[in-house]
Structure formats: structure tokens, C-alpha cells
Length: 225
Image 1 (cartoon, rainbow, N blue to C red):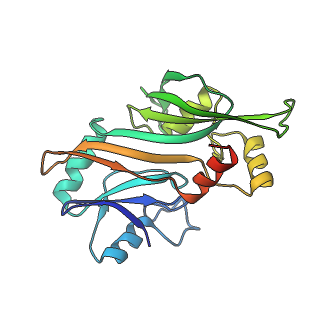
Image 2 (cartoon, rainbow, N blue to C red; image 1 turned 135 degrees about the vertical axis):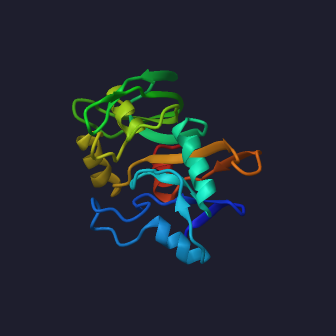
């Protein structure tokens, strides 16, 4: 059963587990379960996602019950009228706060502006040797993307040499191997924690928050957070 964290007559949001695809995709032929179909079956109603989050990312995934609301919310996301917050566990000790202004290239080769700001919430140093270092360092950051480019947070955090743990595409393979060997952890530690937007029908402010998934919470405990 999917965890429903918001529902009204127009919109519904779930706390998506890490590893669950939003919908069927030709590039993920190995998947047999999808958030869209699971939610439709669970509530017995047709829904359509109004945005996307990566398969390996956990957290808030928002759906609309009808086409008009779906289009309105998609427009709000495209025009950056939706405030988004993410939590990520990354390699190394990050600065207290930083803004990342680093354009990202689309699949067709064109560059798009991309902006992310983050604040560091926690830092940890574990007595586990890593490479040339006698210890391993990690940070918990709260990231706010003000643009919505593909894999933006993953690429931006990798760009500043603090890749997200468990990110196989843009991350650190040695760190990912360490987490697998030490803790049997393969989850990408990125969580969509909050959405804030103006409701397209009622005009009121909506704030949706999602608790951490169990895999993410387990690493928080390992870090002593």
C-alpha cells in the first residue's frame, strides 16, 4: 500500500518509495510495479502525475484527478511556481550554505540555466577508512532547486564534489561500493521532502511534507543523526 500524504477532490500525493518508477517506461523494462498503476488500483480512481521524480528518489509525488488540474499544475511546475525541498546525504563535509549556478546540458546538447541552493543540516565523521583517509565524512543537506532540470540535484552536487550517496550515474562508485559492503545499502539517498504551491482550484496555499523512507532513516541512524 502506498502512503497517501495529501488528498482533496482535485489532487492526491504519495510518499513514493525509493526504486519505484512513476509509470511504465521503455528504458526500464525490468520494472513490474509503477506508482501510477498502484495508486489507481489502491483508490479505485484514475489519476495522472503532474511532475516527475527519479526512480531512485523517494518522497513526494503529486497526481491530479482531472485533466484541467493536471495541466494547471504542470504549468506551475514548468514556471517554477512550486517550491521544492529535498534532503540528501552526500560525500564529504559541505559548507554551511551554498548556491550553485551551473548550466546543464539537455539530451539534444543545448545548455539550460540551472540553479540550486542548499544548507547543511548535519555532518558526520565515521571511523571507517576510505581511500587515503583514516575516516569517512558525510553531510545531510537540504537542497532547494529553483529550476527543474533533469537530474539537477544529482548533477549539481556532483559538480561541487559532494555527490549523493547511492547515485550510480553521477555519484562516487567507491563510496557506493563502501555503502554496499558495510551496510548492504544500494538506495540513492535523495528524498523529496516538501512541496509548497497555490492550489489551482481553491487558490489557497498547499504545503505537503513527506517523512523519510526506511532506507534513508537507517543511514541517518548509522551517521548518528
